[in-house]
Amino acid sequence: MTASPLDLTVIADLDRDILSTSGQTVPVIAPFTGEVLHDLPTSSVGDVQNAYSRARLTQLAWARAGFQKRRAILLRAHDLILQRRELLLDLVQSETGKTRGQAFEEVFQAASVTRYNALAAHGVLRGGRRRAGIPLVVTTRVKYRPKGVAGVITPWNYPLSLAAMDVVPALAAGCGVVQKADNQGALSILALRRAFIDAGVPEHLWALVTGDGAEIGGAVTNDADYICFTGSTATGKRVAAQASSNLTGASLELGGKNPLLVLDDVNPAKVAADAVAACFSSMGQLCVSSERIYVDQKVADEFTRAFVDATRALTIGAAFDYSTDIGSLTSQAQLDRVTAHVENAVAAGATVLAGGRARPDLGPYFFEPTVLTGVTAAMDCFAQETFGPVVSVYIVDSEQEAILAANDTSYGLNASVFSGSARRGLRVAAALEAGSVNVNEGYRGSFASVAAPMGGIKQSGLGRRNGPEGLLRFADAVTISRATGLLQLPRRGPEWGAMVMPMLLMVGALKVIRRR
Image (cartoon, rainbow, N blue to C red; front, side, top):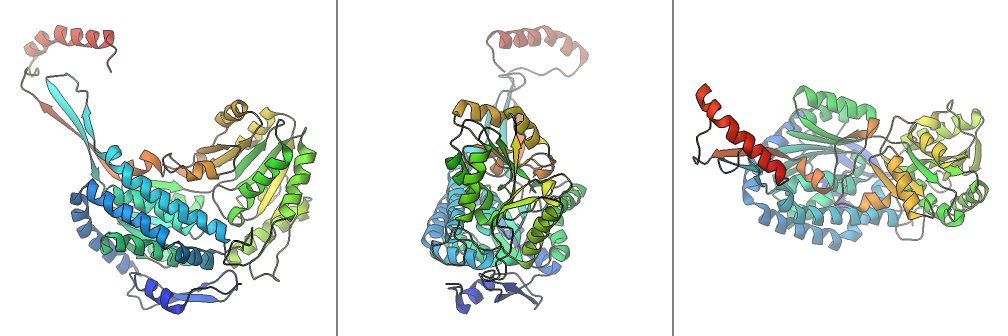
């Protein structure tokens, strides 16, 4: 089955929630068929500005509503996400070309993120007492104030997951949101948003705008009290520069060229099966998927043979059920980039062990999962992110060589290491330069751990989403200190003279009782 199960009534109903007065639309293509899925209304700069104005007014009441009310609403949204999962799965597949299983990964992630933030926000952001500079004489408390209205810019590849990981903590913290959705993922995000609105989130608190990033992206960034961006490193740097000109905080999840290490103590056949999932989930159109494999020479032959066999055994196709392992690339641009990287590598001497060709017989953007060897620094796919189903296998002579090769990159988003020893795997993981590292798993361990921070180092981004760190992005810490009147703090020279010895005694006492 390749035709989308969505009907025009469902699409038209969702499209009405886009803030658009331009009267203009853009066609959105269904990856499985290459046909127009729907004509998406687009927003203007004025629409973005109006969205911020409405969100600011609504956010004031939302912030005053308190943690308990927000918690109850978000928990209802969690339940609605799960109840509406079939619609969400259909939408994600129709827009991205994923398999049913990889679409479910998104629904599960969105629900998990929602529940975590609903339950964690009060504990993380309630504030409380801190030790004062002079105990008893001064009391000090910290409170957290919502930043206001966050701007969120999300890409097409994981529309539900990436929207939830930025929007939901903002809502839980008491903020409003103006989100620019990529055109290719707007329907999925609209359906997610509808679940939150039906759960009780005020309609104007979470506004959705669409259109060309060059035209309206600057307005989304310029008016934000905090900006979240997921996308390429090049665009992320422009967003960061614009945000910094306004002294606006930002979190950026950017590109990656993620390594996967196979040590010499593994079961090669089992690791090969796990590595296939790490490299080719969502056709490699995932910021944390693996594009470089470093395998110890002691197990290289057996692993490579099993990895190639497992890659070739993948079922590729368009189906709105769980019968396929691999779906389609999302767009012609993606197909062109993947094709160019493979052709460039082959022309420069790389060897294709599996895949390496488009599959127009299955659909316009299908491309076989591809395994390359003999990749060198002269080839585009060596250091550049392919963002597609292409992985390069390198043989190394030692664990240390694998670590050095893995770290020899300007990126640092995700890494993984496979070892027969948990202790050894954790030790190697600690040596890898990445924001997230998985042991005996490709990416799903850290990606699904919504209570733990996720983000990149080096050229892979700034800041963290998920966990307490993801909530703290959307609040300003305010320190409030009060003089108790028990003792007058010194104001003039003689008063300072009288207070020096008591203050030194206090410092000594704190040291003795080991108080901070």
